[in-house]
Image (cartoon, rainbow, N blue to C red; front, top):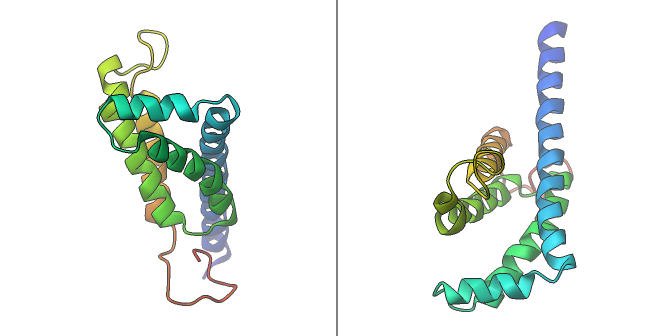
Length: 144
């Protein structure tokens, strides 16, 4: 492989790693804020009021995933399944909450879908470029 191509690949790998770290930070902030400001119970109560069984359990699970998942993303572990699961959760957030509020998060609207769409797109693209999980459990397996 030419040196130029190797440098391009390395630059692309660093860019995807940086995006993975950024997403991990954004998602962790969301989960830690909900946990730290006692938002799990109100979130669970709201889910229950919307007809979801075990709303508190679901809210706790989502919050735990938003706290533990980013640690795994930073380590490069289970990137594909984590990104898929988080994207699904944020898509459900659009369906349940954000779509009713319109597109914009601020400015021309409030609490809209745009931020969630951006997160979903980044998560799905990151899952797409991440190596698939293999049966190998060696220390060199980046998606273990």
